[in-house]
Structures are given as C-alpha cells and as structure tokens.
Length: 114
Length: 114
Image 1: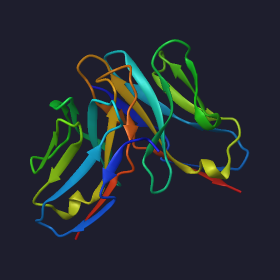
Image 2: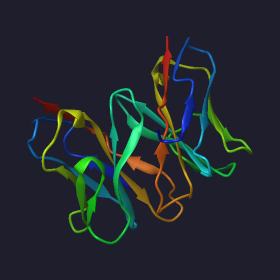
Image 3: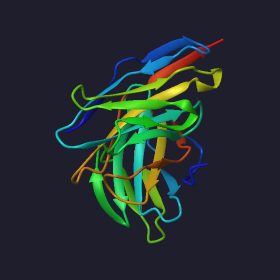
C-alpha cells in the first residue's frame, strides 16, 4: 500500500458528461501529480500541485482541470468527455517538489466513456 | 526537454533465466532515474532509483540497474526471474531545475514463462 488513495476505482460514464476524480496523498506529502495512462499514449503527465499551488503543467486538455485543497487532497475534473478520454488516471504524491525525491502512486481510477 | 526510450516493448523469458530491460534517456540537465513496476490492475511501485553516487543501484525483489552517463542508459537487470516478476516495467527520468514532472518510457512487458 503506497498510502495514496484514489476514488473511485472505476467510473463508467457517457460522452459529454463531467466527472471528478479524487486523490488523497500520503500523510505529509505536499506535492500531488496527475497522470493519464492509455494504451496508445502510455503514461502522460497532466499536472502537478505543490501545497495548493499549480507548479507544472503537461499534456492536459482544456476540458480538464484540477485543484489541490487546503487539506492537500486533490481533484481532477474532466468535462465534455469523449470516447478517447477512456484511460487509467493515476495520482502520485511526494514529500518534496522537484528533484531528489520519489513519487508514490495510487491504484488509479479507471475511466470508461461510452 | 527530456525523454525516455525503452527499447523493447515485450520481453518473454523462461523462469530462472536472467533478464535485462533496456532504457535510454536524453536530458539537457542532470537527471534522476527510476524504474517502476506495474502488476496487472495495480498502480506503479518503485523498484529502484538513481539520484547520485554509485552507478550500480540495487532495488527490491532482486532487481538492479546500472547508470551509464556516457551511454545515457539505465538498464534494469535480474539474474534469475520468477513467474511473479511478470509485469510491466517503466523507466522514468526526473529532470532538475524547475522541471517537476516524471517522464516515463512506454513500458516493457516482461512475461516469465514456466
């Protein structure tokens, strides 16, 4: 158990809908990262927050947004969903930002858009 | 910019045989290198990491990797694999400076056959 909790584990929704994925980092970790894993794109970095502030942005679509709350949990919001958004979404956390650290991954949320 | 290339998408081996999973990286700055393992329907688990110091790094489950700066490689090895090592293995690089994201390779599926 990595200590990173993601909910829900599975989500099935229709095209055009909006969903929210939740991540609770390990106790004491200030950084939260979101990744998308799909068969064709592999593991893609979406976005990172550190202590409530956005610190790095990757290949995140404009239809997607995220935030980190004062209690350090994070939510990834996906809207106007398309079939191609079906993927495994991982959250990771680390105690420090940037280099010289290690990221712990949650079990992921498997999103299926039908 | 940084990138990671895992040279083999699939590696089938027999139980108790040695295995090497290859990883090459490119980066314009000093890097920190990681190998993660993903078992079916699970999140990513850190196998080992290279931050500095000895270029031979030992990890969990009998795996080790050697950092070779001149060849920009970080190959993962195990002298004798078990059926339970069947999983997907990801090489990742974490750049320095303001680059906070982990960049992953496409993964190598290791299948250990009896």
